[in-house]
Image (cartoon, rainbow, N blue to C red; front, side):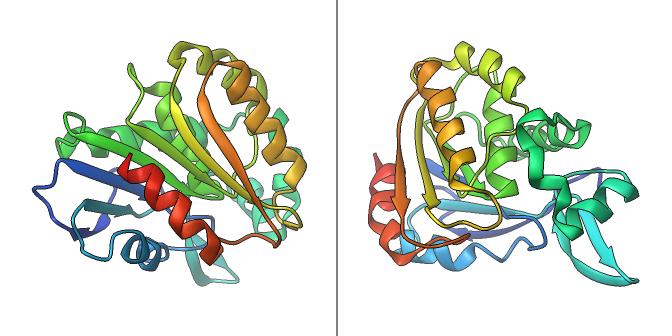
Length: 224
């Protein structure tokens, strides 16, 4: 599979803003997928928003099917499209996860975003990559938001998270999520708390989504 060497994005808001928000979409979506969420969180367009496109193009039966951050091999991607790939995330540590995290950090450097108030986050697979970005950074961002994320690479995540004690995070997950089970979200939350991170898990009734009820707490988190 071919991986884009340079990440592209949809930008929105005020480019000169001191506050910059980097948003990573989920598996099978594209850069514009979470743009409506950004507009709901920042209706006055005061912040500098970057909706980054994943580097891998999904194809199923020769038809383009959105984008993905990992995995990189055709066999694993076929398993991901069928759903079986995500059944044991805690035991997985795919090279594509680390490579995508590195690419997002390169994007942040290329656009000179690191010196501003930087917030990173995403939905589902994008949230896992956002966490990977933080684990790879030498210093924690102003905040990390994890929307419907599961715990992946559990052992390495627990170890590297301890180097960013006090990192602010907001996590949300549906209690009946059929894609990434709530138990995985709880395991991730516990891992971050045990590493002395500062955050909460917002639980909502529902599945694999970002509900309207999350708008207010997420907006407060991003502005804090």
